[in-house]
Every structure is written in C-alpha cells, then in structure tokens.
Image (tube, rainbow, N blue to C red; front, side, top):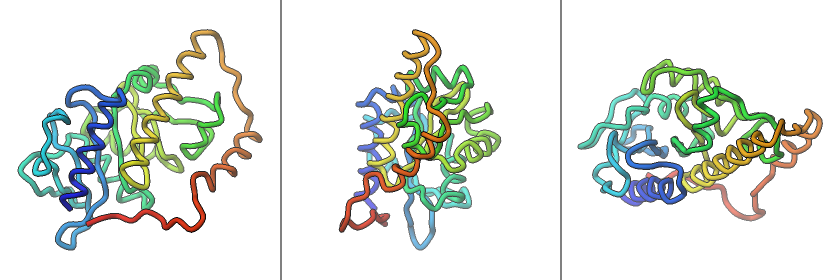
Amino acid sequence: MLELRQQLIDSAMGMAGAGLNRGSAGNVSVRAQLGGSDGFLITPTGMACESLHVDDVVFMRLDGTSEGRRQPSSEWRFHRDLYRHRADAGAIVHAHSPFATSLACLRRDVPPFHYMIARFGGDSLRCAAYATFGTQALSDAVVAAMVDRRACLLANHGMLVCGDDLRQALDLAVELEALCEQYWRACQLGEPVLLDATEMRRVLDKFAGYGQQVGVPAPHFQE
C-alpha cells in the first residue's frame, strides 16, 4: 500500500510537470483495498502536490467514509461514483488544464475533428452539465457524461479521465489536453472539418485492440 500511495503522489507531480495543474487544483485517485474494504486512495484537499507525503494520502471506502490524517479531495464523490459504476476504472485524474478548461467554459462537446477522439471511447468528448464543485449533482453529471467514455469535460471547471491504472490515466490526460489544444487552435482558423460517422466507427473498431501486446499480462491492482 505504501508503494501505491507513492505512485499516487508521483502521478500528482506528473500532472504538474505536464502543465495540467498548478498549485492545489485537481486531484488523482487509484482503486485500492484496505482491511478487506474496497475503495480508493485519493489526494487530500487543498494541498499542493510537491508538499505531499505518503501519510497525507487518504483511503476512502465506497460508502463514502475515509481513513487518514487528512481530509479527502472535495471532489471525492465523482471518484467514488465512477469506481462504483465502472469496473474498468482503475485510476482517475481530474485537472484544470488550460485548453480543456477553456473549452469546458464554453460548455462545448469536442466533435470528431481528429480520429484520436476515438481513443476516449466514442465519436466525441462530452461536456458534463454544470454543477457546484464537490456536490452529488456534479458527480451525477460526470457519471452521465462518462457513459462509454474514458474522459469528459466538466462545464466551467476542467477535465476528467479514467484509466486502467495511474500511468494510463495520466497519459490519457496529457493526450486529452493536447487534443483540446489542437481543437482550440483549429477553431481560430475556421470551422474544423469533422470525420463522419462511418469513419469514426472504423477508427473505434481499430482502437478496440490499441496498445494491447500479445503475451503481456493485463495490469492488476495493488493492495
């Protein structure tokens, strides 16, 4: 468990290093077990990633109770609810990255301007409906926007990505921010040409086996 706590902190540091977050904004979690209870580790509220120690990481059960010397991120509800609803979610990254947040403030879905949109599970990146941060209403909006998706925008707020593990979640968050930047820049020049439904279905089929290596075991969660 100590190793997984350190991996969580390293991922939070990686978000800052990749320019996805500044200060204490954003949060990261990873699915875990403690004392036979299913739950997740999550970064604490209001602490900059560079100041975090393994003892600052909070364990939360799926019933919403927590264990640790710190209070969990104020956004723990959508982490919990995604782990409840998504068996494929091993880790979650939430960031206030510049380009994703800019698009989120327009409350705009990102359409299939680039085939890599399919990397996130569909033919668009949805923007979840606005709700006050840390509320159950926001969590409900996130869960709805994440149906059949690995990522979404949060209206007037930021981005959210789930992955199989911490490394994949962070990698996907970096990819998502890059796509948001590309879409934002393309929109400065005009209306991007969108890929049609037939092409996006073709790309989604190709992505079904993307990154899978023959003979390499699937990742597993650490306790």
